[in-house]
Amino acid sequence: MKNGSVEEIVECLNQGGVVLLPTDTVYGLAVSPKFDESIDRLFALKRRPRNVNLPIMVASDDELEPLGFEVSESARRLLRSPLIPGSLTLALGFRSEYRPDWLEGRDEAAVRIPNDGRLLAVLREAGPLLVTSANAHSAGTPDNVAEILEQLDGAPDLHVDGGILQTTASTLVNCRVDPPVIERVGVVPEAEILKYLS
Image (cartoon, rainbow, N blue to C red; front, side, top):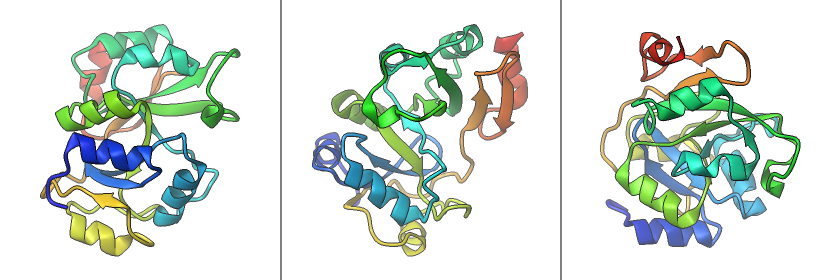
């Protein structure tokens, strides 16, 4: 499919489908956490080990505490910065109280609020999603849909072709530790992040 509408993407996700779609960084594979079979299929498509947890995307930082996340002061600074929404992923821990079933057993999760109008609209409609780069595990993410489909072990239920995308992932900051640690430098340079943490 060339240009998937928000409605088509949300319908597919809400029916337990796996969606290949452009993000504001690389292409991603998305599923709703409400469907265990969808999550299983996503791991299988990527040949990803089950002990490597999937990242989460949300539409707003208002969704973090209801999901049980512990939002540290350093995380709050980054969430209030111009870097978010955008190409910055935060590793967050959990409070001891409530969290949804699909997050049980996890000590932390990588969370991102993307800066992409269509994807944000999907997240507002569908709720938080599990979204990971569209590639075979440990391989680079291709910049186009055709190469991604060749690389995956099977096909997603819906693919949205956004043309040629960059192949650099988001920058990952571990906000569970103090001071925070930049664990992966991606689109956002380290110097930009440090401005808001100092």
